[in-house]
Image 1 (cartoon, rainbow, N blue to C red):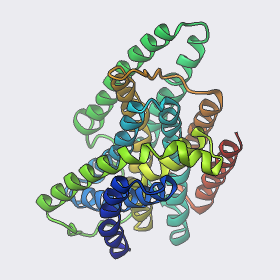
Image 2: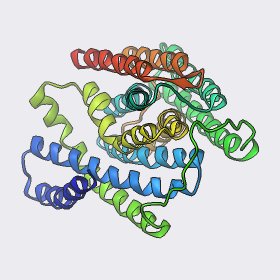
Image 3: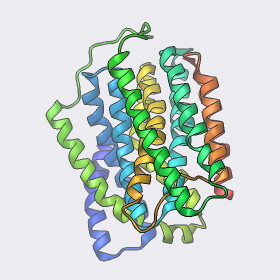
Image 4: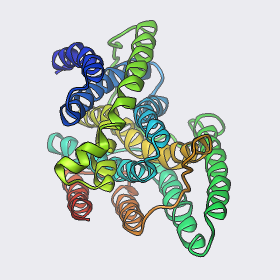
Length: 350
């Protein structure tokens, strides 16, 4: 598979540059851009995995989530610059649904086919449950309720205040897990860890990560300009493009990493990628995008549509119910995947 991604990068990056200069059809370029970003994301995933091997499961999961979300953050900033606020909000919704239902679902399902049951740190699961409840049910739902009778400026002011609070709490959560309570909630590992050698040296991994991020930034800017034409050609709504297409393309790196880790029975890392990425999207990426939007003519308040809020809230509740015991199997993965499919159909038909 790595050879396939290598060929995709070798062909996709030049085609992306040539096609943008020669103004090839938008639908064709949309496909080229998406496939190239996915291939580049695989390199970012492999680089972060190399760095994570020496850093442990928590920091490894954080690295995977951070650089996986970097792709979506870049795409979203260019979308904001183009005034596509609805696409950005939809992509944030899609990331939450994708990580909680698709990534976690695939991880539980694929790992569960190989192992009867898989365990992960139950204390982390409970800690994450509280943060998910805050990030989605409190910080996302409250703006929707309180802004019903507010002016646009008041909505933006409330969103900025909430965004700052969420960023501070997210950094405090990292400090809690990685510094003050590091090792306090240790649980016996579900497998005896074998010594692994990283695929790349630290220096090579950092260089690949940097170059892939630059390439993704270049291609993402051009990808954003194809959205309108693609939507008209296929009859897709901006909501569907944001929730399904942008979210899957933007999170391809961590999707692959989490499933691979689950297949290796490294469920602590797999869960940290899926849940940790969701928390990072909700508590850091979304607030940062609200603050970044202040630099552009079209501002982005942190106010989602009712279908988006209900979908995210039910995803959080389902994930908490299934994962709060620190134990999983293939059927729980199938349940999460079924929920994602139902929501995908619903957003497609909106």
